[in-house]
Length: 444
Picture (cartoon, rainbow, N blue to C red):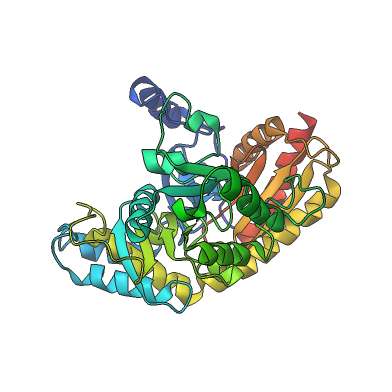
């Protein structure tokens, strides 16, 4: 284990003079819709370290919202992208052929959960994959309606936004939305009020005996869209038997089950897919974010029996670009070549550290997750489980000032989604900074 490194390092309180100049330009000309969580102005990165334009260095526990799966500047990915870009950037894979695209769709089809033969459509992003999946399930079933979950985030275009129900600010003033979308509770074992019943059983019963009896016939439902581990809604892990029960419910009614693994997939949970954690085969799986280590690429992976839409009925000018495919293939090399196991090992080390912290800080209500998909839920008191977003905001700021990058989700959850390459030094140093920052945030 390495004991000394040149990061984290704060040489000037961020943002420094160079960072301030960039922030001022951005503030004058960029869209007012951007969030800009805190004043990080990135210059470059290596592994799980980010350096800003003023020379400050940070340990990264958020990976650009789970995007930098192989870290920053990984030589295998960089070399693959360089080699591809010297040949050409894109040649519209909807209309023409090139080997990296064919290699990637084959590889994803073979890596997909479950024994069924798969086919793959490549997109630019997770949102595009979700939009395509909406079209696919309607085409395949000749049904209209869709079911999603409260807390879900599936993207910001209209179909994806219609499925989402994470924060009202993501929907306010943008309606009307896609018709025929119905939302049900997500089986949150920590917060969902179930009168003592298992959260998974409660939600399955809700779908069968409330939604299907009072709102929509199951014969009209084309697909159920779910994040097998809820991302933006709070890094929530459902009860162990829920997804199998949902699979059985879908089979019983001829409904297609769609897993949004945009955030949870490609090794993050300590398995290739979160579906593998639960041993469930979806009919359709959507991937993106970490698939290209930061290069724009997404995928719809579906059973061959489902992906049977007509020639020319769906396409993408840039989806599956040569450079994106090269990055994805290199990423999969690394994920299969050891990063899945590293996610398990480092994830267990991180989770144990947060659980020890929870013994000392009553404001930590719950620690949950698999691999490097971990949620730390902050509360005003453990009895009422009242969220404490103010504390989380202070914690983010205090951590940033000390050289640790965090990102929140849900109402008051810190999502721990670092690059899959982080090591014991990154984990232990990051945990120490987190605890110091938390003490300061509590005092503040």
